[in-house]
Figure 1: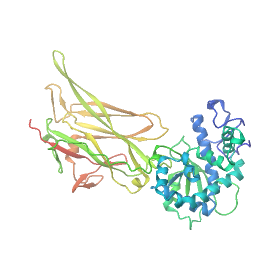
Figure 2: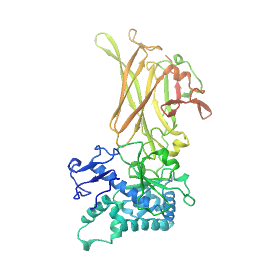
Figure 3: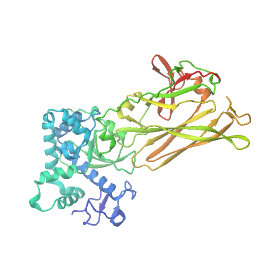
Figure 4: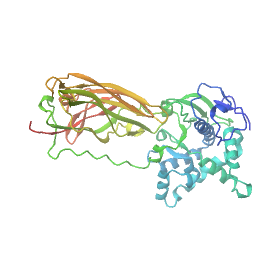
Length: 469
């Protein structure tokens, strides 16, 4: 096995490493030659990243050819409604490893004839370059040898090309072209950049620049590639199959509105919160949300994923010879919300129909909206805030004035706590409609007041049921 060149981020000192090794990472001799890398990756993840890294370089060489670029673009457009990603398994025609969404799309074609030409051209380009130059990609070469060794005796093997297809397809790689719609390969004269998901960071990575002119042996390493770079520079990202990719062709159902009381009426005017008593029912929902910008988008991810928590107060009355009451914080978790790149770029309103509070009592003088963003590798994060209570503890009854505060906390795995917004019941009801800082959202003829927690825009819809005291 040839040593990996020093311009690569790290290299193996031992030539006996097998791709499927079960050795813990600390038993593998690794030299850290670039601050890009840390020891935070587990062995399996590290191998996954090395595979994606070298394949991104191999892909860059293949993409020097105009016909290959055109074939990839056409293939992505056929398979992906978002028009920016396709699995390597599909490119190679390996149905056994294709994700369900792409298998479903393939079934809608005329037995695949519509894609046969593009698939064949690009598949052959990848295979021919690999077979002729695999020694230039030491980690892929050694991994392929390990893969072959597990196939048994030579007499049971298929052709070398078929073995290579099966090997590549088994790696679970995806080719992602974040802003494919901005580039016309028929006329494009610039360079092509390839990169890969490093897993250890969420905002930038190294890349490899491939000129479309000349015969340089390898791409030029560039130290910083991020989302902004890929807007103006044609950038292909080698990443990994995950739940977002599996679901890319599945249009999620529109969430149904929770069921309010049958005689509830929508409040389409601003009200004084004291006019809605503790006995009345104030059924509050968040019908739609909008992500204003891509601040929370992971490096080259196809989605921004966020989750709400509601932090509120609960008054507990106990009877132990004397009547007493206490207040404590409570937290409620809502469903994950996903925004595609286009949702964010086009500032689309997404229907979520979140039941914020089925009965916003007067005792809940203020509540908190806590916002988390989801990432694959982030650890557990925690958000803390305080909610105000409107309760007269002497006379044992709700009051329009706040009397104390309680702490509310929310914890979430694989996330980052972003920010929170305190929602005063008096202020919320005083601004049901009409513009303030973030404008209005017109729905069913009503100009709802838009609010914001971080970059996330939303509005409240209140259904009021008058209950006689």
